[in-house]
Length: 184
Image (cartoon, rainbow, N blue to C red; front, side, top):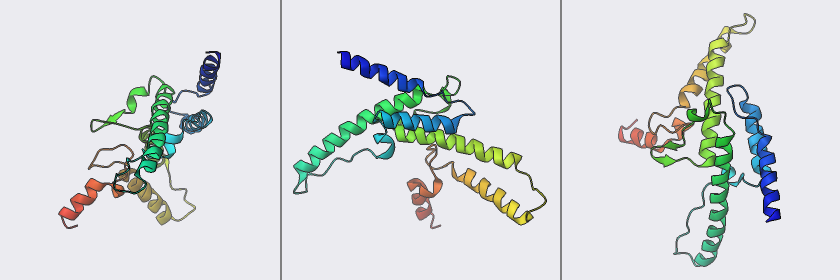
């Protein structure tokens, strides 16, 4: 009982080190969240995909199933707790800006964390496009190319085929399927 209480207090102390995410502190917030998740050994779901159930056609199926069960349990716990930590470290004013579900499917902690990162990356690109000015010293064509590349990158951050936040259209299976159907 005492050990459990101490563990909860340490957990709360680590969480208090994370300054709530606002519109201006994403890099610091991201660093703190990742550090806290690592210290609490909850970053597994951010770095690993959900384990896939093995097929019973393999000779070592029992061993593979045992490994799957252990990894799956670790991943599920890490995913649930990491997502809660991420959610609760977002300021109240921004909390609703990041959807928890896409296409009636709940996002994993990794997807949720990445969607927040992509949101702030989009904001950075838009600000760069708005405030970037030609300095009159370097080549004008280089400035135009830089602006054009930022616009392309910004456009690619939004996938019109599956509407997944932070999903890059060049890696979209639905887009590839559409292109194959239309012979493009």
